[in-house]
Length: 305
Image 1 (cartoon, rainbow, N blue to C red):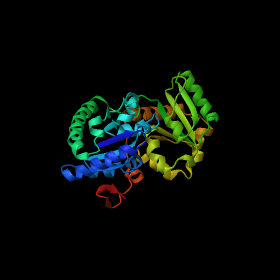
Image 2 (cartoon, rainbow, N blue to C red):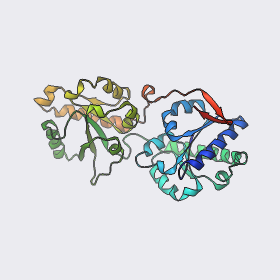
Image 3 (cartoon, rainbow, N blue to C red):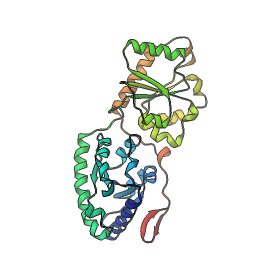
């Protein structure tokens, strides 16, 4: 179980998590570790396989519209510290499409920096929340298409090209609502259209795609439209998307220059739509797993080097 403990800046929640992990280690019934939120995302698989409880500390303000997808897919429980309880409702709204439980951490638990007294109270709370989350998980199935438009990354193309203008004209006739923009990772997540949009094209060059950002990128992107001029030198990155099983459409030079094969584009869009409707988060170990360093103990508090 991944548990996020959010306070105003992360300092108080850090102390709480450390003390709880130390007490759990004394009890010996469960295995637990604490870490910061950045490390938790990088090492989610290793921690998930190695521990029963993973306590993660940080500021509650780290859960935003840009990061909610990551938090919702990783954390089973988000505990809100008493001093930031006024934000609980807004965090619940952000995570409403995920089975994550958002709850005020009781003052009688958080206020007891005496972990021995808080241990039983916290364990009872987690058992109750785990049962509640199991019920919510049956009620909520999160797919890539849920509550968002279809998003396609266009590599090596321009919205001003004749090729795309023909496509846009065709979509307008079909009354398909679409938008075009330059790609940025921040813009990918922070999308606030003024009008309804069904299809979103994000234009980029191959150099903008970085392996360290691949996990975040593939959680939102539903398809890749690779233009022929960008293919050379993009083969390795193309393989990354294939490993994530994201549909790729790569028209030839002849198709782009001489004729517009709308059927090929339509087939691609149908494939993308089917993929987005069915797909949930997929992880690829090669790109996301970071090996854990040997376990250490400092002042009898469990930590990772």
